Length: 124
Image 1: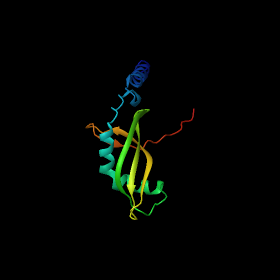
Image 2: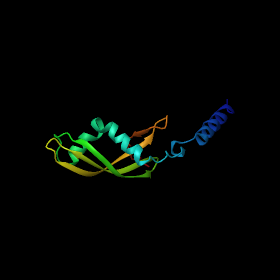
Image 3: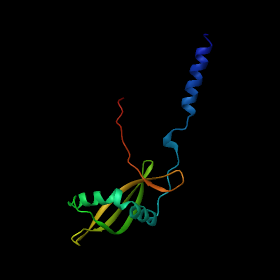
Image 4: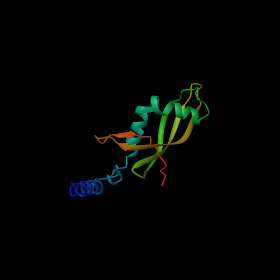
């Protein structure tokens, strides 16, 4: 029995040391400007329109997407942040261009997907 405990402890420690942590996964490839534009156009109604209205101080007014320009992407830890300019037209025909950003990763099939990253402070 005395020998079994050290062997079990050694196996547990070795398993923890050799496990591949999430932080060692490869970075997702940076999306092209076209990929980001296509994603925003496809998800405007459910993901971006409300945010656009809030940022334009018109939360009750649904904006129609006119264009997405000046897409710039960079790595942020294990994901990608893309900044872009979105131009929308409101129901009164006025338009606004806003600087926006979103954080992306790649789905299992390589498709672009918007992500929300939660940070949890750790006590040491």
